[in-house]
Image (cartoon, rainbow over all chains, first blue to last red; front, side, top):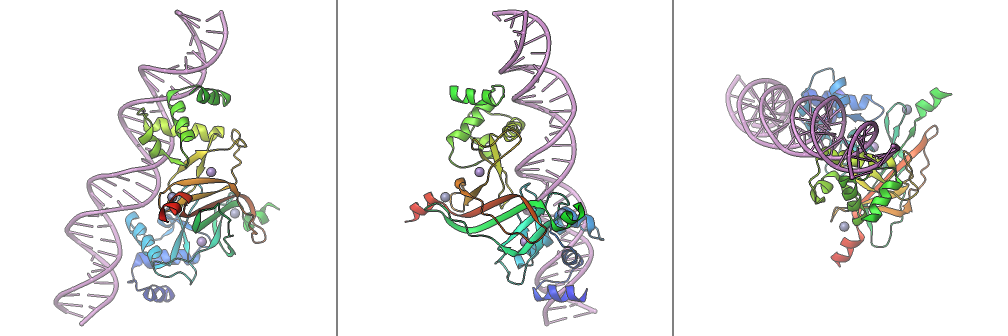
Length: 141
Length: 141
DNA sequence: TAAGTTCCTGCAACTGTGTTGCAAAATATT
DNA sequence: AATATTTTGCAACACAGTTGCAGGAACTTA
Ligand SMILES: [Mn+2]
Ligand SMILES: [Mn+2]
Ligand SMILES: [Zn+2]
Ligand SMILES: [Zn+2]
């Protein structure tokens, strides 16, 4: 709890119930979270709008990043230390499990370089892989 | 026009105004189309729902495929011949131009293989790259 | 080509997601 | 503690997408 407060202070954010609670949800969760997950699991009943604004604040500050998904839902996950305010450095692959629906940031799997046709210049690449995750694979055996 | 009719018949679809018109919009367009593009550019004013249902029918039949985007809008583009009903085989990279906002299917750029951590099994990979496209790069010179 | 059947369309109503303006409440500053 | 700044919750809105249903269009068969 103290830890969460210091963390927020380091990012120049004032300490509020929603920020503490939402941040701790992220640190306590392995996978990524959707807006609905937060609305459901936060012990306090924050207004939808507060959750949206808190998430946006965290994205702006480089605390969390969004994850594009094939079904066009929005997911959020904690950034690594390399992300700064207004400047994200997330170049890892994302994995969505078809079985348990968990979304992982594979921090150790970097986005591969892709050779584009003449004239195309890449600025940003997103790789989303779906399949069966480590946990679900073990369960199946 | 005759061509469009035969094409639809080959897929076992009955011939309707909306299907003819929406299909021809795809064949006449280089990049991908959003629902709104179709609503705007179809000479006839089809109901929103009709457009949604026509797009879904085309996706089901393997005529078009959806493209995931970073801003979570839904785009559609024509499939290659290898796609069958209920069974898509699109393993190409998608490119979104930050300048002209066109989305390209880079049919000749295949999705690179990614080495996942132990226990993760990949079923499907999506690669979306954004940057500057061929056209916009030429214009800048 | 006409009748009957099947399928598609348009409308209305609804759900879900995200946004904005504003006053009240909470937090930070002095 | 008083003041200034931020954040919150509410209401209202915008927009994308879905569903049920009745009427209309397209297909089938004769
Ligand atoms: Mn991530
Ligand atoms: Mn494509
Ligand atoms: Zn799993
Ligand atoms: Zn371009």
